[in-house]
Image (cartoon, rainbow, N blue to C red; front, side, top):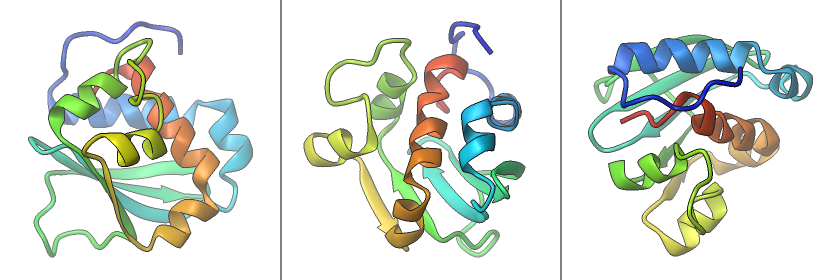
Amino acid sequence: MTTAPTATRAPAEWAEAFTEANNTDPEIQAHGKYFTTTWLLDAGEHSYAIKLESGEVTAVTVDPGPLDVPYQFAIRASSDTWREFGQPVPKPMFHGIWAASFQRDMRLEGDVLVLMQNLRCITRQIELLRIIGSPV
């Protein structure tokens, strides 16, 4: 997928674009064979529970309620932070979750061990925002 990010998409459209980008990304498919989890991308204005089975996104629940979808870990940040992540060339400190969590408002919560065990896949999923655009 080589298209540049467009204007902010509706949440359901973003979820569909994220699913397609993830499921057709050769790197995620190579590294994600054992990546099965549900994680939450919280962008303030909207949140997305992303369910993965063997590296493939099988469901994205937009704005789940607190008991709707259980997830193992969450990556939370302001809308402004996620918008910077969605730029083709992010500003310094918006290029990765560690930089943003140390210098910006990004927080990693929940079972961070699962995130660490699948760090390359999560990192690549965040990099996909440079292609499909911000979730908000």
